[in-house]
Length: 157
Length: 453
Image (cartoon, rainbow over all chains, first blue to last red; front, top):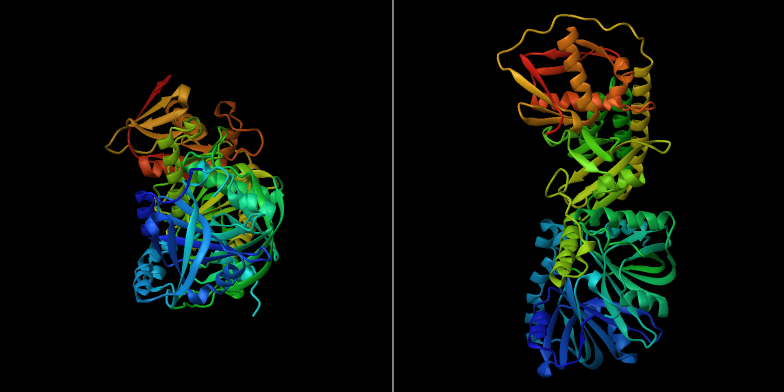
């Protein structure tokens, strides 16, 4: 699978910030993994870092994991191409979301409808993912994995 | 409240992909989608392994994983803690997962690419609902109550037992499934000797699907027929979209194009979102396949599988009984009478000998055994003035190519009758009494025989 180092290229930045889906993975010191859906992503530091927003109510385990294990995985996907970019890296900082983050997270709800469109219009017209309050997790990128749909994948995302 | 896998079985209907988190031996996490998940029993689920992925590698290094799944009806999210137990590369569970993947892949010509390498069996050690995942929460739709299921079973069962002939049995069953469960689109197909299945009964398509064919092993119906097992595919549109993306990737990359074959058009509804197919078996002998489809993603539930399997067994037995009853009939000489008065519009029937195929006025009518039967009837009418025939004499004619045992003659006559209704209503096959029928001709006809088209 194509693998690259930071900084992110402009096309990768565009892809990440336009993704319809953001998944954030962490792991506890007892090696129990945890996933949470992100509700916004911003590329920082010239493409060397990202800030990922996660709903605070959903993120307790993730935040607890990060206190003992700084490794993070952030996968972004764009439907319907099914290609993904996964970032691996280490935690830089965690902070409460601010009003700017809130605006970004709120705008993400429309993308959520795209992600869940297979369930049908009836539900995605009315259901809204909870995005606020959110927590911003800043990640220093170590590796970037670009993945086409599964069969072309090799061994490491 | 403890949540069981059964409580959230809708989440495993492959409508919305789940999200799986794993980590490697260095505690580096990985997170990605997982689409093929199957409940094994109360404690275990199976994840499909089709391609080498980091998820699979991680599970072998660290057996723990967390999985988030979504209810397609309410969008409620559930978090499962998993412990990888074992990989299975054969057996009933593996087969079931593999066949479902094969059915979807065959629609997009990717059976050589999408193949199951292993089923990763994971123990589910905890399940919790993700409270607060949605701003607004939704009550799930009411599930069918057991009494509703029982009433439905009784009603459909009554229709089956009252059917006087095969056509009534099959069309009545499909109509009853619509009436009771809202399965608005259904067909029943029977196997031919050449590896195809042909539609002889349909409901919801306006009769246009009669005679439609599916190859053994292709698409959901073909895979069900080949493997003689019920399969249910939900989120068909999502699965096809994903498969087509994969296909496009392969074509873009110019990679392994020999692995990609032609797409198989969806039978029936072009916009179906869910399909279910049930084999009609007597012992291990395939009598046919019931194929149901819906534009709704979640029309077919887990409990329908068991329910329809019971009905399928009953239908197969009834098909067998009707065939045997028919074979037991006496062998009086069929009566002869004058041909029916001819109507104004002449019709030309052309039989292409080498293709076993009949055209009417240059338009395809029917092929294989039903074509040979029609041609025999038309020739006998012309040469012997015969209009009434018996099933038995057809069975005894070696030129028709009917198998010596369980010849499926009734199905073939139904197909012929319905194709005539569609393409040449001036000709009718009318039952006169059990095991006998008349060929009614309401127009002048011309018979042409050619070697090949």
